[in-house]
Length: 257
View 1 (cartoon, rainbow, N blue to C red):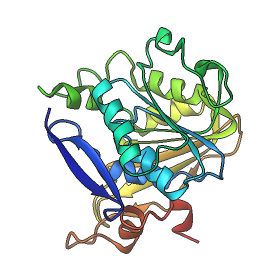
View 2 (view 1 turned 120 degrees about the vertical axis):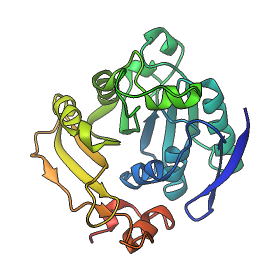
View 3 (view 1 turned 180 degrees about the vertical axis):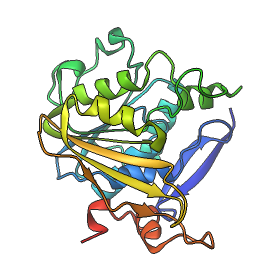
View 4 (view 1 turned 60 degrees about the vertical axis):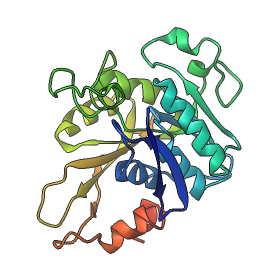
């Protein structure tokens, strides 16, 4: 496999990732921007890939404690290397694990020292595969195919696995395709309330293709449709909001204050 090194957060983070196949981009940075944590809080990134989203969070909030799960061992190892190279490997653990197989977790321990599947996190984030099985042509590149097309874990399974890892009153946030929003809301509202939907518009006149959805575990608050973010001007240049999020690492919570 051939690798490249790419800059994120205006080059402040250097991320090793495969040249071909699945490559982290703006979605990972935007997902990280939706996270608000205090020093000592715990974060789990399910399907962390090469660690981009988790490391963006860790860069902004160095005192948080991060766990990552990744089914592809080569990507999991790259995530560990990326954490070390960026000086962000303190209180950061990446596990090779397939969320479909509980036996993968038999020897793994969570943030409270309990067995992983019995423990809980302050915040869980995820960028699940975008396409349902049979609804997209699989790439000949195995890394890209696994990252983009659902396998044995469909979207409902993925969401329920993530939600089960969240502490009561903790947060669960994912980024996904807008055309699957109804599925996301249906599954998330089984365990989460105060659902907050944030559209991500390519420009001011194009429908949102991506959406961030965040919920609070064991909470009954109503759903809210957020202001959303327009990422590009009509001439293709990044908007001020996009620059703040993707280059400066500003959290979403600060955008409309």
